[in-house]
Length: 74
Image 1 (cartoon, rainbow, N blue to C red):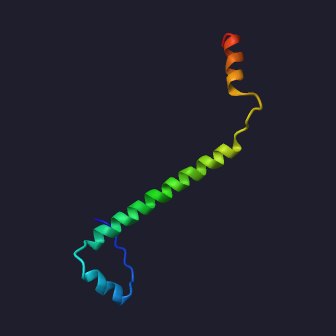
Image 2: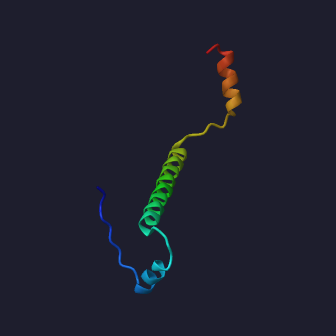
Image 3: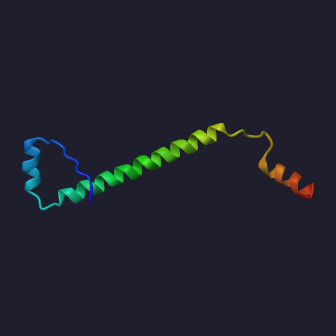
């Protein structure tokens, strides 16, 4: 069994909702789920950006570091 969420909406909006054959409960649940997915993705991207800012970058190109490592026999 799920939780109950109540919201107060204007009366004219409720009247307009009745005009259409829409499962408003299902529609709202899907809209909330989509918004949560969007917010979670934004949070992950923000965390990745923060991690990237903490990384130290070398002035030496990566290909040169790889070549030196290979030449050293590692």
